[in-house]
Length: 548
Ligand code: ISL
Ligand code: CA
Figure 1 (cartoon, helix red, strand yellow):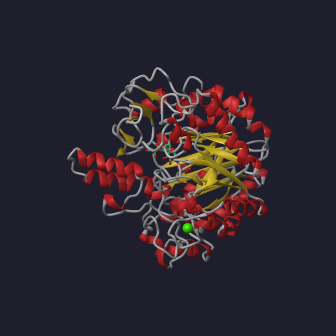
Figure 2 (cartoon, rainbow, N blue to C red; figure 1 turned 135 degrees about the horizontal axis):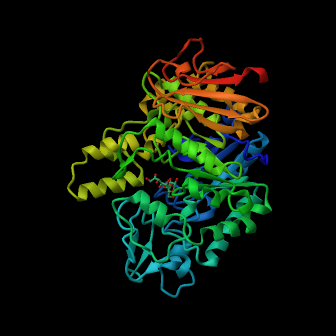
Figure 3 (cartoon, rainbow, N blue to C red; figure 1 turned 90 degrees about the vertical axis):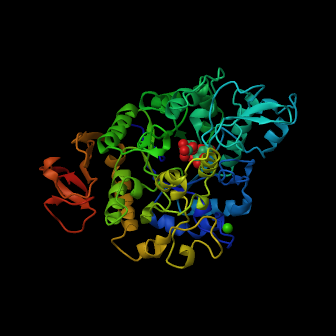
């Protein structure tokens, strides 16, 4: 396999609004990121990915862009940006930004022009129809078609009505987006994470969807549109290949069978794909807010299927949480008595798979889901709209509150807990979203003072991975596939041979019942002492003896 810097990098995702506030207005900002660059360098990550920092009215916290070549007022100025980028590069790290090409804000001047009249030159920057051509629904409740009385037509928005979908059929729109990319690459940015990338090519027959199966609608109707790969190849040739950068596409709706259409190196489209299959593992019939139990065997099969589907031809991201999903330790671990052990176990999984791991801010200190008492305390547009919908329908919202506490995006958006000081040291003002009250015990300051903390577990394993290409490029094989408690696998190549054994349960088990470790030696565990048992949430890495 071809070795490249981006395959060997570990990515750290910053949600700037919640990372660190430097001026007391309660909103994280670029100045706050600059303050924490040494912290990130100390952790040992290679690439910082910033959720959107472009000008935005913040209907969806920056995923609604009103100017792609300027900085959001709340986050700072272009000078702050230049200083931040220089600080990142000085420390030997790289920066990737979040491009949102599928939709803009309705406050973007393109849309302001577009809605003015049917013959405005910007009209076909968006999708306008006399009548809604389909029953498409928005991710954030209601129809995806919004009536605009100015010209008495409907425009398409797959997300909020303040996020009109851009019309990539129009070559001018594509050129605008390539110009945006050139603008940031010329400044020295090292790549882009590309938001809902599989949606940019639309099915112009706008087929109706099954309203009771949104997941199917995503895969078969919204994503993987007819001209998608033509656009990606064009983007690659017009922009990506002109710089030493990397592109990673948010792979919503992409499945193992079509993954290589995006990332096969020979196709010259994207560098890596960020798929969702495990992240939606507990979605029930009613989707995200209708959660069901999930099985470890399914979870393991998803990672395994993706590994085999991609093979040596492409590269994927490995992640367990981000700003759209609950905290990983609350979701896949045990955030009660085994919080530390299970956070370390999940770190072991993240950092020993083939792919580019993405650590979401706060996971390195084991931050957990938050439980707000009322729906009013939630800020996320998805929840605000859903809440309004339930109220309008006269429904009892108690089950919704419960589902939001478990599944809501704000779980991962509470501000970073830097210390046990007021508001976790995140801000001197009033935070835009309440902190998780457990900041008094779970915070970065406490973690940095404790050699056994989750933070140092990440740091040590990050350093080990960096010097162990087998863990990056090596082959993978699932072991003990049927177990509902243990996730075990082998990673190997001609330079090394490892076994990873992860106990995803509170139970104490005999590891020899699952995997034969005879020729291997224990390299590390998330428990300091040794035992014949595989203890609750124990994570072990073994290395083959003759190769040591
Ligand atoms: O959280 C979700 C909605 O339930 C996801 O399905 C999410 O909408 C999907 O992952 C796309 O996410 C991206 O685009 C959205 C934005 O709100 C998310 O924050 C972003 O990651 C629209 O730009
Ligand atoms: Ca601020």
